[in-house]
Image (cartoon, rainbow, N blue to C red; front, side, top):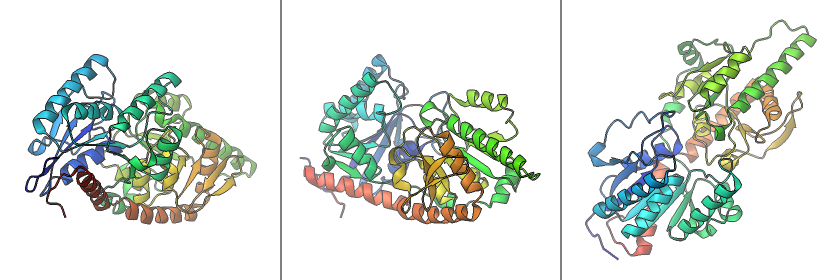
Amino acid sequence: MPEHPQQKIKVVRVIARLNIGGPAKQAIFLTHRLNGRYFQSSLITGVVGSDEEKLAFLDCDQDGEVHVLPQLGREISLWQDVRIFFDLCRIFKAIQPDIIHTHTAKAGTLGRLAAMCAGVPIKVHTFHGHVFRGYFGPFKTRLFIVIEWILAYFTDRIVVLSESQRRELADEFHIAPKGKFQIIPLGFNLAPFTSCKSMDEARHALAMNSNAFVLGFVGRLVPIKNPSLLLDAYCQADGYRRQTSKEFSDSTFEPWSVIVAGGGELLEGLQSTVQANELSERFLFCGWQHHVEQVYAAVNVVVLTSLNEGTPVALIEAMASGKPFIATRVGGVIDLMVGDGSLLMADNGGVFTIYQNGILVESRDATGMAGALLYLASHLEEAEAMGRVGREFSVKLFDEQRLIGDIRGLYQDLLAEKGIQFGLV
């Protein structure tokens, strides 16, 4: 194996696109922060789709770190993917990296295949989530599982974000033995969220009622995120509240408000449904926000409705902002819960599990989510306490310096296994 007593270790990271979301944030952050005395990092990426938003801080190719291959996007195309494979082989042979680290499914497939062809010594792949549930039909899903199983055999280490994700990939889908996985939680600069403006200031900026109970949804409006569940739960909870208000002759009924921050293929359909239900005055669709901390500051509770998740960044950001959340029990969400859950039933008949920092409902369960919303709206002090617990938890576990240390340690271990010597001590 080659020795590099004075040379930097070359790391090339590959990701399909740098849209707003957790995988892209991690890829660009690690590329910039692992450039220095011991590592020379670069990033290969495609372009975002027409219905997506590019990360705001990716304005230029800094010091040649970022290489854009336009065809390396999320869409699968046999001819373009073959072309990308050969482009990656060419780039890898020119750079001669010591480590290839891929992110997301398509980039993970093409990147690792090209790395094998180019003779790259170390291959690492991060599963931020997976496409084995909620994306495709049985045949295509099985095909992707087989592809990942084959690629895993030639991958030196597979990074997952949580223990439940490792169990799922190792025990349920049998992608690789447990020993080949390494758990490295996400890491971020959470300062913008821990120090965000007050609720009154944030609501004033959005022209919202300072006394309203406000729900927040932050993310892509695509099928796997199932945002229509929020609308269904809202309508159920609203109907229950109106009926109860009439029964008790309560003239102080205040409708809830909803902020939807994000975009995607379902946006127009959601807006049409909201309009058809005469809810336009209660729903604020504010699009992609590059300062999303202002949205978190304005809400009482953050809602996640996904059918599948790795570790959802929106919930980490919500906790750092001191907000409780209601989320579907999918993927790695369970690893974000603090304390032992208690099963409760709301007055509307909805069942949910309450933790110290948030509430879980079953996937697609609009009645359970409506019940959880009703519970938090009537227990505001408990909701605020959840937010305090979540903030402490997120800052402790998802710090950016911890992430850098974990990734550096992973690379150091793999370099030692391959007998590649360099100056990191």
